[in-house]
Image 1: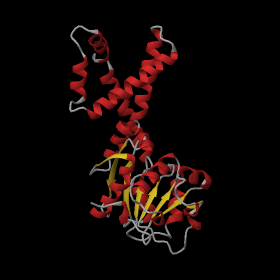
Image 2: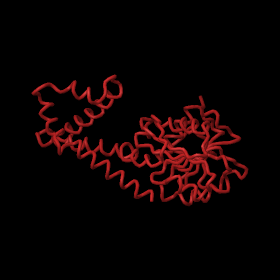
Image 3: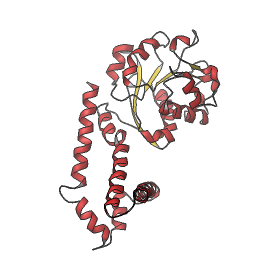
Image 4: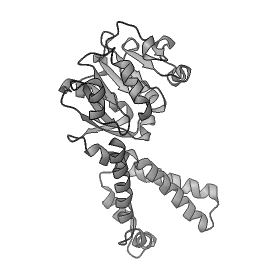
Length: 280
């Protein structure tokens, strides 16, 4: 199996962007075996970046690509900057990389075509969509590799992305928009469910603090149970639903024709369409 130790000082990894997501990934890589001499970090807020990863020597952090050693030839460049900063980042990197340098992007909305227009048709590019729980190593990331990516390079990217949690792949880039709609935006749907559930509790007389506590622990606990159980969500729902009981009364509302199922389809389709618009 490809390991992070396969990335060496001779062909190091350059991380561009060391905010919450980039910093969390870097911490995971270092714990997973990436050596300090095999990584360089670029972030304009260099002091903040150093604070994110105190275990890495300060001389490994730079505020711009121009500050990197002139003889550096990266094997991997991980792009963890905001989409609006990507144009400048790629322009700065063009003179530093070679044909088989892998560009691994976690920026929303930036397509393979976008990268090859700037870097050339021979560019080796992986596009990935993580979600915010990746910041604590509990996310899920789905990637798409262009035709220039070798099996070995894809395997290394898989290991890099595993620092953020579960990793999967699609064979059609267009499916990344669906991934974005389900898992990329999905945490916000869950957070809003907590807000809504807590708010409903308040309407029944619970004080705000207790309602928030009940909603938060219910959602987190149910998620942990689902993750650890051999049963799927449908069976777990049935397990907690007694005939003519309180849960059935509630589900009769949520599962009616105009209920949560239809609303969620509309929700995900709206996110999907917006993801496609942003990629155009």
